[in-house]
Image (tube, rainbow, N blue to C red; front, side, top):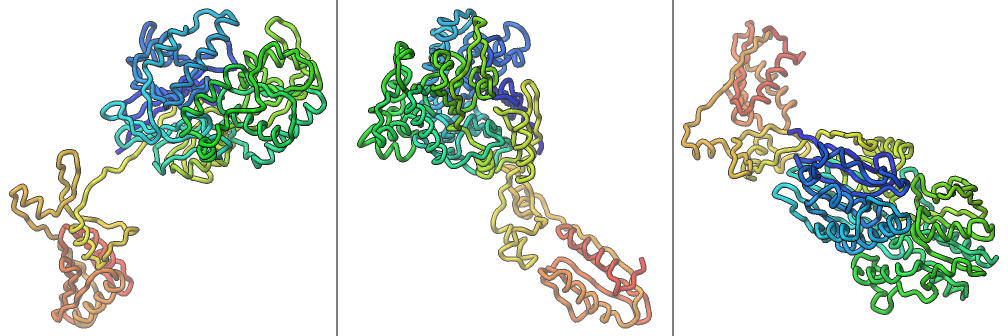
Length: 605
């Protein structure tokens, strides 16, 4: 039975940022993530929802069955209030508990930077964020949520950030796994992503680091600590742009223990307010963290730092060395960009970019070697500080993506949330290694995948045993295909194959027996029983698994339902009669073919 799955990226198609994937499965339309693009400040920052709505004034509610948000990062949820309150969507929005708690805080931060600092209009309001969050339906890990009678979703742990989940979406026999962002290696505060061997028709996976196989984490951490220490020892300032939750906590735990061990007195700061919020949520959702944090949590909270203090904007111009964690992580706005502008002209200072930066952001420009930046007011900024890139990214690398494919065994793979050139490399690797189709659609490009499904049928064990006994195979050989004879009946919405005699009895119908008979002429001298003996030996050799009897009258019976008889005088053409019941059509045809083609028997039709 063949049917289709259709996927159209409205964002994150051969691009990182603005994740928004439109999925049509079993007649249901689902939006996977609804993010904004950090590299744009115009209408391109949000997905183009006119792709879904037919005409102006048309609401998304009429076209979508549900929206699923994988985690709280803005490139996955930043367009939610715009989509639900400004474009118009009243249906359910599914996400995990931590995502529901943290998402509105980040949306409000984003709104403040865009509206209150940059003075933009036609943007969502605080009220819209609240109204949007009222539409959220919370999903627990490994809980199957029934969206409607046919559509069900299940969340799996994705690592990456607090509350991140992968979703298994199922309609009837069709299924899709959407990963969102995930990490296949555990870190200091979160565990590794995990999923069942659910064998979906399609796995839609992020591919941010499609060509990267990361080195040992321990080496990276050692390198990071050495760079920070060397810079502050020379009197420089270190800026580490981070997002509020996730990588920030990872690096804070790392620096805190190093400062303790080395007895360093240089101050470490974190964006004011965010540390408290982060600690609060890590305490609240302790079950989502790594095993080590859960164990030590009883004695002490690993997120209560002795050396890391809240940062005040007045500290930007303070003399002497310091380390500052500031948001956001790609230097595209906010405090991190403000500090960068102040510290960039001094070559003693350093900026460490600990993760991926989207094209168009200041982070992306300096990582690509830009030493002069044009600011919004047309001023030119000289970048003299040391720019370092160290991947502490919580995304899966190429090895991790391949690991996930092995884990869930999909029939097809689709790459999103990555750069086109890197996707090509991974696409070839997946096709070579797993022998399955791999797709990488661009934004606005649709991919239709044909899915073929088996129809499940129940068969009584007694019928299987009876059919197997005909070939003398008990238990039956699972690798050998067999024709099974029975009556297909439908009881309720279940299909069952039962014994034909039972089906006839239930319907009150009399059974009729149908047999096929065919005669072959063979030019062979000698008595008929000698030819029969020859045929008996041939059949015994070819049908080893069947019970074959040779009677005194020269007839050969196979499994009690097939008969071979030889007639004719010594010097005459012999007639070989082959007779079989319709249930044994496959063996009957095989015998005819065998007798016609065997070179030891001279044939004449």
